[in-house]
Length: 213
Image 1: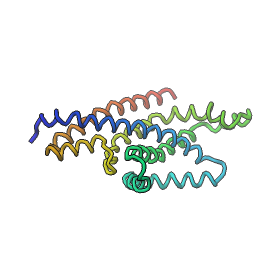
Image 2: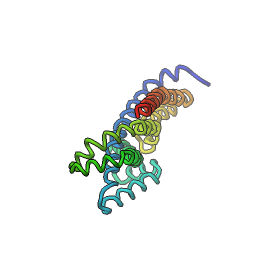
Image 3: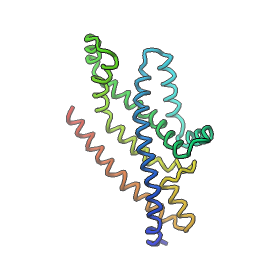
């Protein structure tokens, strides 16, 4: 039976978990964005001794479940806090996906611009910084945002290694007060309220970028 008193009592606990969920999402997204770009560039390295291992590592991470990666990191890195492990694993896991997004954005830069940079003898770092990356990043921003939302919705996996994120807190409160219905419903509502406006905003951004091409 539904009791509103359970909702009001669990709200501060769930919101405390939400702060950690949001922190893990923001930090994990930053790791994924930066590391994914590095992997995308390394995957285009002229030497196969760099290119092949990078692509193999990306394929491996993409082919294994994030929960298995969390358990493996938790076992192999016992001295790190579970929060650091959780953020790191989420960041690395999604970096493997964002690297493919970056790769597609880089490949979309017209070949003629690469050739023009070569004809002008521009340094490689300037080609990337001034010509390639501004165009690539503009094209991939909506996709990067969608992966950030996906990461937000996958933060409950962090509870398997003891990270006190929102679902973990809701389960703890529910087990102590026999109020799973109210606390989990409240948690689902917070996920919806937090992610839906962002999804709408990203869709609007994508439509504007498409019209500007």
